[in-house]
Amino acid sequence: MNAGINHQRFAQLMSLGSFDGIFIYREALPIGPPVWEWVCARRFRKPVLFDFDDAVFLGDTNPTNWIVGRMKCAWKVERVIRWSRQVIAGNAYLAAYARAHHLHVTVIPTPIDTSRYQPRQAAEGMNGRIPVIGW
Image (cartoon, helix red, strand yellow):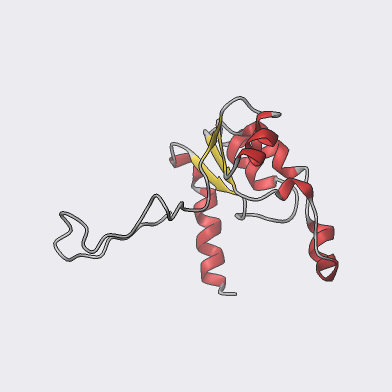
C-alpha cells in the first residue's frame, strides 16, 4: 500500500468542510464502525448521499474470511442510512430495507438492461471521440 495515497486520502477527509455534500459508496469503508461516516454527517454537518448496491446489512461472511467477518459491523448500514439526506439503492429489495430507516430513497438499478440500451456504431456528435463515463 502506498503511504502517499493514504496521506492524500486522509487530507481529503480532513478538508470535508470545504465540500457542499458528501457521496458515500458502501465500499468506501467496508469494515469497522461508522466513524468516518459519522464525522461526515455530524461533525461537518454536510448533506450525505449514501449509495449501496449489496445487502451489506446482512453481515454474512464466508467462513474462510472469518477475520473480516469479525471486523464487519452490519448495523453500520442502518446508521449511515439514517444520517443521510438521500439514499440510492441498487434494487427494490435494498430500497425496502432503506425505507424502513429513511424516507428519501431512490432506486437506481445496478445492472444495465442490454435489451434496452444497445451500443451504436458511432455516437452522434462525438466526432470520433471515445465517450468516458466515470463515478
